[in-house]
Length: 116
Length: 140
Image (cartoon, rainbow over all chains, first blue to last red; front, side, top):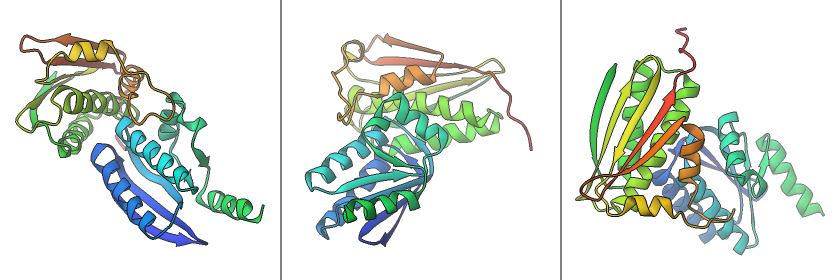
């Protein structure tokens, strides 16, 4: 899996490409740990190019979400392909993640929260 | 019918290696993208179960994958060298939405048309997943 890191308005944006499974899930967690070291706790994951996700990948996302909540940050997701969205729906994880149609919409939500 | 057999050591990286081989075979056999995704997810869940709960990531233990593809269905046997795997499958952990694990069997059941769990002689678990083919991939 490739992970590309950018930043916009204080939100770290990780764009994932490839399969999100046991080994890439660990890689993602390591990457986010480095962000925590820089005190970055507002994190957006763009899943547009995730071509496969299994329960281990989902587990890694849940683990990240819990870590980020403990640090009073936010985790948002966007651009889920229909089959990835389907997996979130089957496992009911769509109820606990903040999922946006587009990255822009997700990033705007941080502005709204900060303004409020 | 085309059949294939692979053996992997029980290390984390084997999951990725198995999926690479599986996807290449499914593409070569013109399995539609939708069926590829469902079958790969079901096999991946069985494989991860074998890796973590069966062989407990012991690199000395192996996981065997036997794959058969024909016009009507796709099927795979995933066989580990663990102990009491069937018991572990029959008594799944309680999971809530914030659990990091415990979704594999549900996803396997959702993606495959048939899933069978069998205890084999040496104590390992054999999981058979079958997907009935409903569409033929379009060659573009």
